[in-house]
Image: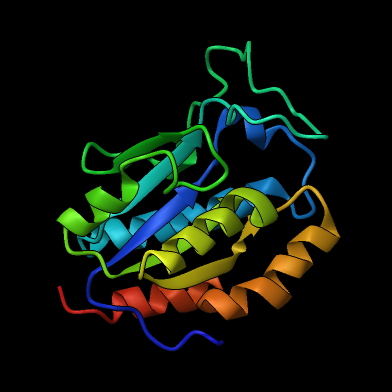
Length: 187
């Protein structure tokens, strides 16, 4: 579904734009993804809307066939991209699962401030972003996905999420369109 509107109580949720993950090879240039996420954070903060910055600090305990160990990480691995300009008013959430709702208090924190919709961006499209989008949708939030502010390590995974999964979970749009909707909101 194409981008149409944002609720008055919309939060931005930025997934895993952190030092350790920003070094991974991605389909789209990571600098552009981070720049678009930073534009979104600035627009949301300017209107006094919540910004949640999510990082991953470990992995879920389950055994998998492709176990990518998230243990013995460098101390700065989970440091957020400085371009996001973390503010004291931001909601900071550290997770150990793919999605940002399953192992954190993010839902409760968003509900406490009356959030009814989330705009998602970050890395990786098919893992952290998609899992968070599914959890947000299942929790009753309206979901918008900033598709030019996310990327993946594999082109086919990114395309599958954007073209097949996201339209079933919410609306998709670009950073410029989302920023225009935010700027048009009442103060």
